[in-house]
Amino acid sequence: MNISLLIRTDALYSLNFFIYLQNIYLNQTQREERFKFPYVTEMIQFYDNFEMKFKQLWEGILIKFYKEKDNGLDLKIFYEEKDLFYDKLFIPNSDSLKTYNEIHTGFEVWWSSVAGRFSVENVIENPMHNIYIELTNSLKKNEREPKKQLNISLIYDKCILSNTKFHSYFAVLFIMDIYSNKEELILKLQSCIS
Image (cartoon, rainbow, N blue to C red; front, side, top):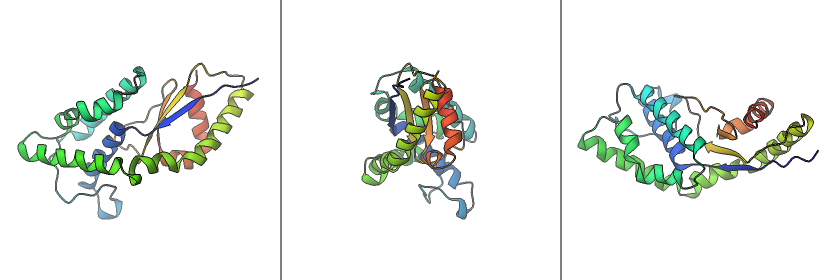
């Protein structure tokens, strides 16, 4: 049986911006030895229920990515709907808006550079090829034929404040997921292909 599996991997601006914001928030509440990238010295004025609001917003945007197949959705959310992050996560005032705009610009500069998105997408190239082979072999062994392309969105750090749920033909993976337990990852990706 020949298996025709197509996998598309990308590193979305908006999901990685979420992780960037999550890490800034976590750095305000952790000890120095547990700091994450990026580290900022300024205390950011996040809502007290930041974690709940983050989770709701994250899950809502994941559903949008899962349901909409429009490739322009990511940049639309990041640029045209950028105030969504501010409105939901930051206490609104002129200082926090200025800080938020600086954070947004800082992320954009980093993510657009070789050290950002390019590095995240390229660091998984070889291990992802091995996962592709193992997943294809597993599907062949179980006589399962994919019905469409499997879309995998990469995030540069672990999403701690919410789940990176697996949906039908859609998954969000922290780059270290690809390097850690391959067998478990193959099983999770198989569950996406239904």
